[in-house]
Length: 105
Image 1 (tube, one colour):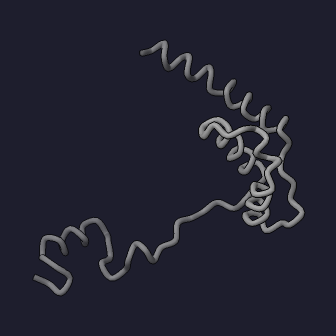
Image 2: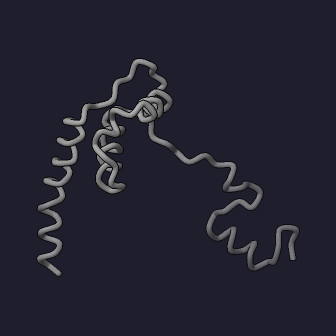
């Protein structure tokens, strides 16, 4: 045995390049910076996948979240019409893919 555990464990750690003296919790995951287009995509996904109403963009709490994430106190949320267009575009973009996918099955 070594001070870090069994020899086999130590050998495995060395073979995969892991360092037992550092913790995975010390590393911070990379979070992409806030962008308005990424937030629009998030809102469209929230309305479709999580079945939220499109008027969520008129919610003060949603605006507070956008301000917090962007650091911009003057940020505006997209309109209901914009989110509706984004959802329509997502559907049109996926419809050909899904049609082809299910034809193969």
